[in-house]
Image (tube, rainbow, N blue to C red):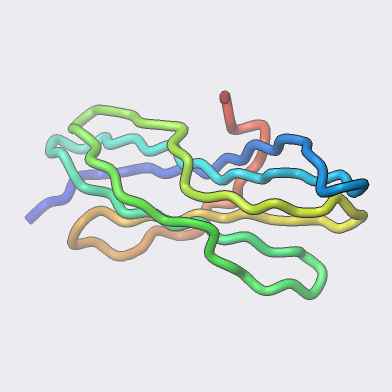
Length: 116
């Protein structure tokens, strides 16, 4: 059975906040999905976060969406994390799969990809 062709892009948004005297960022992962196939598919997706220097990947969220043939959805919020601001680089990555298919490769998130 063909599940169609689905392209996934990751994107992030970051909003300023504070925890007492400490500045924070609420970092939210989103996905955009585009089904270029001829059949609708259910798409599962996950987002992971880490601090680049010495951090390990932590799941920040997951979900499912129904994507019609030829339709694009998103950005759809996958999950978020709040971080105290500091001189560290952080990454978010997402991957997805259509029902019956293998997980896609990882899509690194970049703020320039998000139009929210």
